[in-house]
Amino acid sequence: MIQIQSALFWAYAIGATFALSAGRQLQVWERINAGEGPRTRSRAANPYLALTALFAAVLMVPTGLFLLWQNPAWATMHVADGHDGVWAGFVLFYAGGIPVAAIIGFLVAQALVLVGAGYWAYLQCVGGYFLLFGTLVHGWDGRGYERFFSPDAGDFADWRRGSVVNHVLDFLTSGTFLALLVFGAAVIGTMLLTEIGWLMEGWSLPGADEDRKVHRFLAIAVAAAGVYGLPFAGALVASVLVRLLGGWIGLPLFAVVAGLTLLSRRSPVRWLYGLVGVPDRHWRADLDQDRENYESGVTSDRSA
Image (cartoon, rainbow, N blue to C red; front, side, top):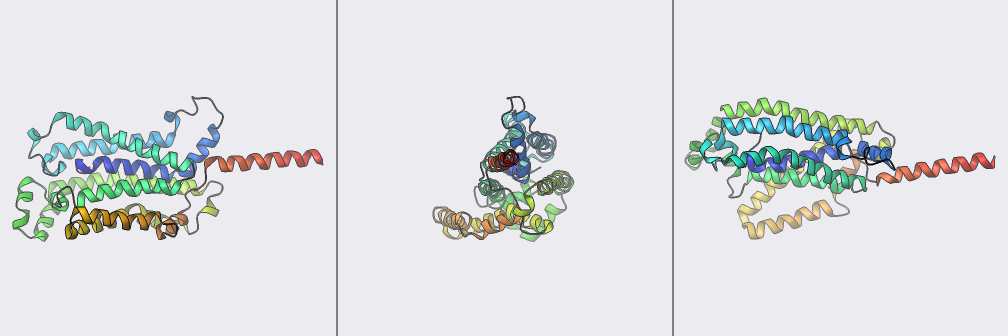
């Protein structure tokens, strides 16, 4: 349901966010399957991965194809003026690429969560959403937001000759925006309910209370700000720097600022991430602890 140039970034970000939201459950899943045969460890047997692929295939792909058929100019960010300008193979690549990108995002974030690198899994979400918002805000030529708020090719061509307010109002009263509202309620609503539901499900598992430092509602608000608000703010800052300083100076400067903000040991983002209660230990840590407790219990029984 989003413009094609940014759709794969969004799919990757959703897959990574789903895996991060279900991080504690994924660790339990690995513990249950530890030492089992290959059938129980099959990727297809992972219910969270299966639901992620189902979400991408059932909700993201059909809504995106509908908008591509309804308004090919807007869906391609006005690269194509109509259906004749859209190559059929491009549509096929889009339809197949969305589930693949979501699955890749999920698997990468899952791998990081399982080895105790949950913060790096979170950075997968930040990176995906930053690329999504960066494409919509700036694009490849600095006119990303103009392409987004232009419902047809004529509006985009006349953008510089009219007022921004009028163009935005025209977009808000267009059929494309109505379709976005309807599809957004289904796609984004399901996405948020899934992420919140999996977070709360994970918080009910053993060890979650000691990892989560704030109330559940505040933890959800912090998670939303970190996953969606921070990348959007970063995309705006990057766009402003590029416009003021040019790409050769603006982008490296933004990369330095982003690196210091996200990767520093004393980063406020790291501190906020620690409040949410996503596991930051290797999944085997609890398993080894359980074995130690079991062995110590057996030894105590024998000595008694």
